Amino acid sequence: MSKKEMIAQQREYKKKKALKKAQRIKELEQEREDQKVKWQQFNNRAYSKNKKGQVKRSIFASPESVTGKVGVGTCGIADKPMTQYQDTSKYNVRHLMPQ
Image (cartoon, rainbow, N blue to C red; front, side, top):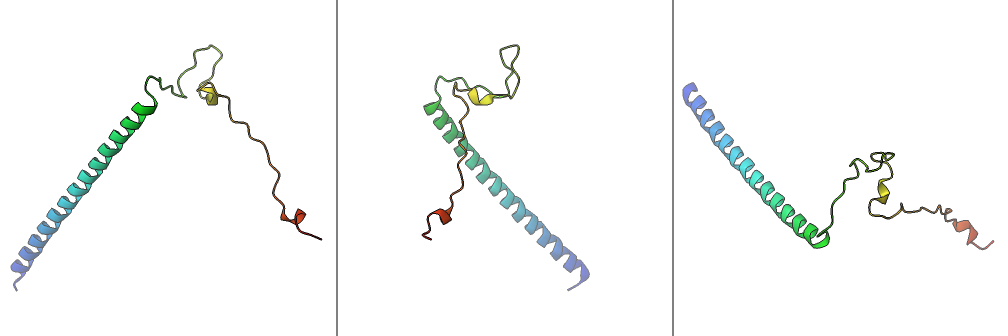
């Protein structure tokens, strides 16, 4: 095989490889787009079932009162106080063992 033929063969091989790669990337992009559309449809359906008529308030929205601070006390958004945490002592097996 001459050098020209070898170069032509390599060029042809690289063209085929590039075409395959472009096709694969296109398929992956299409698959991602399909998954994105599925998720958006699911999310819209779930949101419309549960949150119809509710106004979504951002925790970063500026407060209405003059003394309010942005991002502080955001646990009371839904008119519920922050969950209280009760500190529990560690579970100790030694107390249960007979002596």
